[in-house]
Length: 444
Image 1 (cartoon, rainbow, N blue to C red):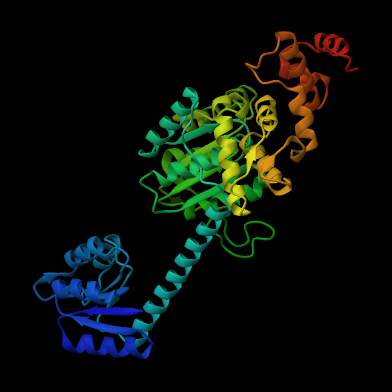
Image 2 (image 1 turned 90 degrees about the vertical axis):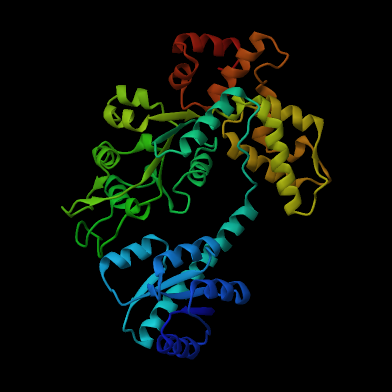
């Protein structure tokens, strides 16, 4: 790395330069803020050792100028006033680290090694983000459906505030994608976005995952862990499928939301965390409250601002555009940029119910692009069950009679329900009525 040493003491500059050079880095020197900025501009330095007391200049003010002009440069403060207050202030203003005077070459080595590891980790994160972007089509946060666009507008307006956000909607509608975009548009964007999948763990493991635990707190707790609340401190904590969070943990989450306090499992020490919470669920939380499965006070605390992402079948104006976007993305990945949908496939898409929503649309298009023999995707390139369902489920608004639409809806509901009672509940009719309608349709 190219390392700039800014100090008004010649001996400090030379000693530090020798240590930096012995570690394989290239040192440069400056005695003032003006000279430092010029050296960084000319040499492209990546690291700057900066004295807190730079002659008549205040090192913290110089730090601010460096941060504004060259935010990518990591600044390490030299200080003869090695107090906690100055160290904290320097770090608060953007310094990477600080070293008290007098210092040894080993201290220089340690901070450069720490910086090297941080840069490697940062590069790895950028690499993974680029890889993820290459594997996923870019998300578009626009909609031709007024209700959907209104939800997006509300979410992004809320993103600018620290308010808790609740995202509702069926599985596969893009709730987690929207949550991440809210983080990107928030004041917490430079801090962590941490996801907790509530249904994936037992009550004990979920509590530990959230709040952390101390060694010996339970069987298998062989060491202390900090938990995801601590990891999200200063950033965003995304609670996915919060409707399935066990009742025993809900009071502790409520405390975090109200008091910004929590305790690790097996520990009585109260800890604090400033986290912005975004939660999502495919359940009707109001009904869960009525059924005693979700705390009413937590529901109201989460429901400060809520938005709903409807299923794909309720977004007919967006379907074609989204399908074309997926087609363009996957076709380009395979070097088949001229691919298109046949009219029959476009019609089948419009008639299909899309129970898996955007996730299913993506999978169907990706599969079709891979299996298509030519540049035109035809019905034979679609999954068998998809084609059958598409044929039997006309879309709302299609030119069919109410009787045909009802019959198709009953068939689809019966095909996706566990039993007759479950299907009757979904349809909003009693089982005896459904039994008679099923007989009339010849489905007995």
